[in-house]
Length: 141
Length: 143
Image (cartoon, rainbow over all chains, first blue to last red; front, top):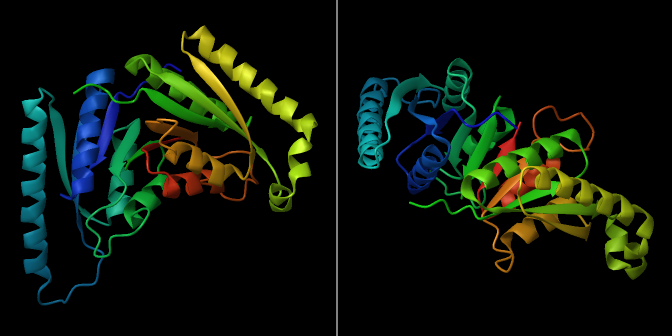
């Protein structure tokens, strides 16, 4: 197959699992010479109290930029440059949209995220991505 | 950091998607200088799994052996070492068990998004989904 991984999309959320997937992404970038796109999605679809909504989203945004910066530092230590994106909306939809827009060849996700209940097997976001994504998905355990 | 994917498991069922998965596995194996393990599972209805005579169906075992030898030729063309394994049982369960078995030292599972099952599920096949959930190793779903 000639299609190698030119572009890899790495959605991160600051959890241990996303760190793991980041490490794996470094490996892939080294091996295949592929470009990385880091993305953090601020979830907007969950019902939040109307009054606190703005404050809550601000906190999330701050957290998101923090996580992205940290990840970028980690990558630059290894000599890899990555494109950084901060999006807002439904997590799965945004990731799919970006994957289509940037024509990514691979989505690299951790098996679980920051969900309130640590699921036994597979997180809801990872599950949805693996079911509906237009490109190949690597789930890091 | 060195790439850790030395041994890649590629489950086969003879469908186009699984061949694509195999191609991807070969591609990754080339990059990381690893080997590919092809696993073909012969579906056995649940009852036969208990009944010993269920495994004596040699007729379809040859079909699987043919599949594995084809895969071997495919990998040999690209210069990759491929070992074939044939198992009789429930595909999802046995693939996950094979991947999780520490004896096999599997580092990654590469699986096609859809197999031979009915085309009702547009997005992800049931076996792929099962493996995705149950395996403790990284899973690459090829679309």
